[in-house]
Image 1 (cartoon, rainbow, N blue to C red):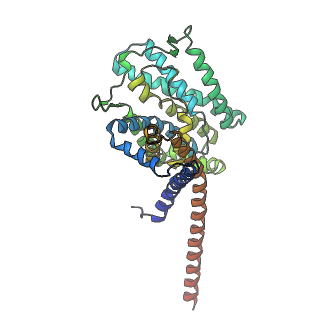
Image 2 (cartoon, rainbow, N blue to C red):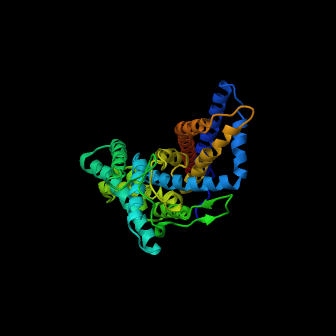
Image 3 (cartoon, helix red, strand yellow):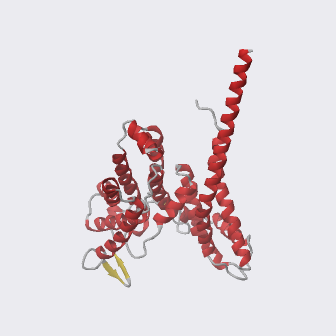
Length: 371
């Protein structure tokens, strides 16, 4: 069994803790500068955890964030920045909604079909950036940003009433999906709400992510290529093939991110479908340090800030702006980069010091033996 490395655990925890503390302190400074209490907003939001309906909302929202963040983390583990998760997720959700509205198979066939459509759509869309990178050297950052814009325009076209869309008031939708494609959740009562059934898909994806990265040859090749493409190539790894494969897999996972909401509640794609999930996932993956457990905690934190912030509108005698939660989220991302660099530098110094002590001890032992 491996020896428990306390210092390694400390280094892993120190970065996120420092980022959260820094974000809270900086947000408090903003509140004080605007003449508001630096403590009351946090108290009001924490009180929301006691309400069962808010707990359900947090879990449901976290499931979307978690799947999208896993997609981002897959790229990060190989030094790839898949900034196109938002476009992949939205395009996949829209295509899944279209297929779900026009096909009516038995549930045991319909649901797997919709999952496959979502994964294929996201994978193909991300694969375009992967092909451009390995064949033409185009940065995946540039390619995926442009593909986000193209996805937005493509969605706008495909949801036109003359194509696959339907006009419902001022909203454009793809029509209600067939009930055989709906995934039932866990109903906790009329006053509490329902936990999406595909929350369990998010959990399963987290387990698969950990197993693949830590217990398979593919995961080893992925991490090795991320550390050094030349070193990985010397050991027989085809770096270009790995880059393309990881981009496709990352896109496939991001394509699944919208399904808990789509199959569990909305049952249609419309203008009100959440946007920006892919960009939020970047901050969550960073805060979670690309670890499935850390990402889960970060996703719950982000969902908590989203769903608890409306309580600030009801503060007395004067309401707080719920943008406070958005400020904190932004500051967390900002603080993560700084805190991780601080922790990394400290860890390197500790490692150098330990190696120096071991070398000095070995030299002293040799002297003693010689005498």
